[in-house]
Amino acid sequence: MKCLIVGYGRMGREGAKILIQRNHEVVARIDSYDKEADSATIRDEDLKDSDMALEFSLKEAVLKNAELYASHGLAAVVGTTGWEDDREKVKELVSRGKSAYLWGSNFSIGAHLFFNLANRATSLVDTIPEYDILAYEIHHNKKKDSPSGTALALGKGILEHSTRKSKIVTDKLDRAPDPEEVHIASLRGGSVPGTHTILLDSFADTIEIKHTARNRGGFALGSVMAAEWLLGKTGFFQVDDFIKDIIPY
Image (tube, rainbow, N blue to C red):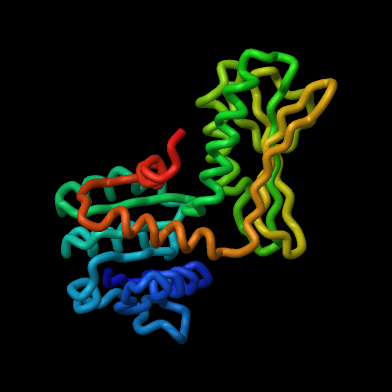
């Protein structure tokens, strides 16, 4: 697979390493700010020479980049977040260009195993009202968003697998949570790796399920595996479509 790296920050660098480890070719590394990149902008020859784009860029660039991919029929795996308002426009571009596009906020295989376990645990205690469900996440002091996309995905899974919970609350609570609310708290500081925990708690005991990301390698590996899965397909996909093929519920 010949891959174009769009966004050569920390995730782009990890992605390039994994591609080479898995015997793929990096055609070019695109980044407006990094001096080690091959180009500041996506060039026509890069699009023609590539089978796949692996993108970890800024949210403002996603729509414009999607237009370029679609115009060349180039498949793309995109890990950029925050571009929800442009989602339908990108879907239309992919459909018109008969290309393939896969988006996800978290490509870590370990994180998706964690989601799977959390969803199953939620289903197991759904009919046992003595157990409440809550969650929290901790990240280093360089992380800009709160709560994390992973925490929101965790909360979404809880709602989908519980008949007792119907609302996620991520703000500070100056009151008792309502029974239908799942409170997901966030903490930032130090160099803490991304850590997400779900708790099933009763008056008698607590059950914890935790995922700790030690580095970005797991996210990069998952994104490359997603690219391998996407190659040869057409349409707009989310990371869950890929995950369902490798992690059965």
